[in-house]
Length: 224
Length: 62
Image (cartoon, rainbow over all chains, first blue to last red; front, side, top):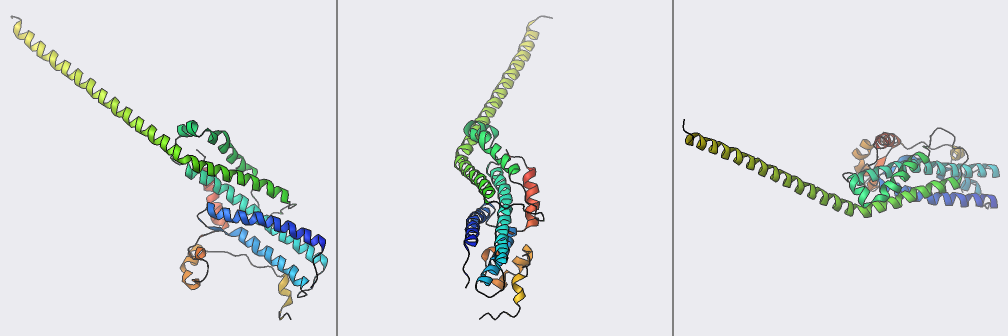
């Protein structure tokens, strides 16, 4: 067996670090969308594994290849994982938006403003920024210079949004309670207004009847 | 000793996995030992995602 060079080991370390993000994102993407597996990143991971096996085949003398062959294949492993990670960023940001939308469906703006001002001040702007910040990766285009620092940056934004979604979950019972109370108050006020209206109508009706009766009595009493 | 008959296989590209959800569910009894998630059709293809993406992006947040 041919040992890995220091340069190859360094690249393997970067690949391992990148994969730690990719794996976490895969698990999170499944939680977000009904435990469904998003296939494009799985295809990329399959290809990354294939390139990795080409290197180990050379190392175990099962396949012929130079140091450059190993280096190129290590770069391809990294590129496929990088692509998988960007596919996941794109997928997750969309389903994070969907999750927020579904969770807050039916909650009034009034409740959000009064009970959970953080939503309009922080969470909504952050979600809208996330939608525009992470570039949608175009499959057929060159991925440019794969850089793990960019992955860390976007990963951080995704994690931040994940925390905001947990905050929304924690606030939901209070928001629902606020809306329920508000609806009950509205219903009580409406009922009171209707009762008052009916009372007014009855009083007017009685006054009209009394006026008619008085009119008839006066009619009888006044001599013709 | 490596018994591989075609050494060129190492450098061949694998084909993309393409999934038809309806076929997957229809034939799920053929691979009962396999993934429950696959058998239930819990996968999302690029085409399905692109469709959902347009829908989700067009809806404004509350």
